[in-house]
Amino acid sequence: MIWKLGLISFLLFIGTISVRAQYINTDELVIVPGEFLPLSISEIEKRGINLSGSSYDQSLTTGIMLSKFQFPVQNKIISRFGPRRGRMHNGLDIRSATGDTIRAAFEGQVISSRYYYGFGNLIIIQHEKNIKTFYAHLSKFIVKSGSRVNRGEPIGRAGNTGRSTGSHLHFEIRENNHPYDPELIYDYKLGEIRNDVESVKSLAQLQRRLIPKGYSVNEGVPQYYTVRSGDSLWRISRRFKMSINHICNVNHIKESSVLKVGQALKLY
Ligand SMILES: [Zn+2]
Image: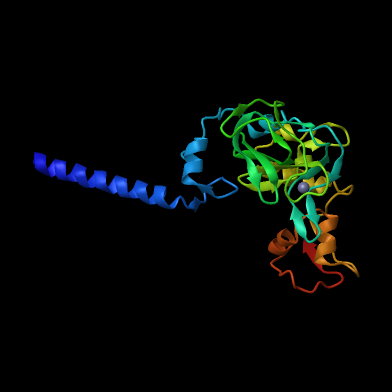
């Protein structure tokens, strides 16, 4: 009996070693649920990412958490969220001089503080409610991966690293890895948090509420849009700040589909 238990433990031990060895030897990039970029096992261990759930206060509602938003750098928006030059621009570009202080939008944990192609020096902060914020093109990091940060705490300095023309901050907010317009939360014109924010259960819900009001396109967005002469999917997507992909999905059409004048297109 004892030798049997011994044999089983020995086999389990060997099994564990071989599984671990497999990871250690290859150090392949793995997709971590809720992570934007693939990570290596050593990175996951180094950052102390908890794959089984978060330790945050779950009693806080998403709306209350979002209503504490702090704008990362007070300056002019030079490029907004939405379709741009044939692709989606997943964030806001905010003019900032190299060296300007960039601040955390909410409290959270820094899960990335390194250079990425395109983003340049990038900080990603994990917040409560599966929300992350991205701060790109930085010239300097103030915080390291793994650090806890408070809302408004300096995390880096603005810059022009990565694919960027001129010093600016590229700022993104994502919920379950899906990017949302930061202007859904913050009314840039009035310089305040929007009234709808506090009562929502998610950013997705906030978007559904605000799109019909045309929160940032200066006109209410109708649920159905009637195609006019000269319209194209690209033009409509730009006008209502929606991706062509989204319009195609809700209407079950392809990007190559020909639009007819008078045709009703569903927008949400
Ligand atoms: Zn940008």
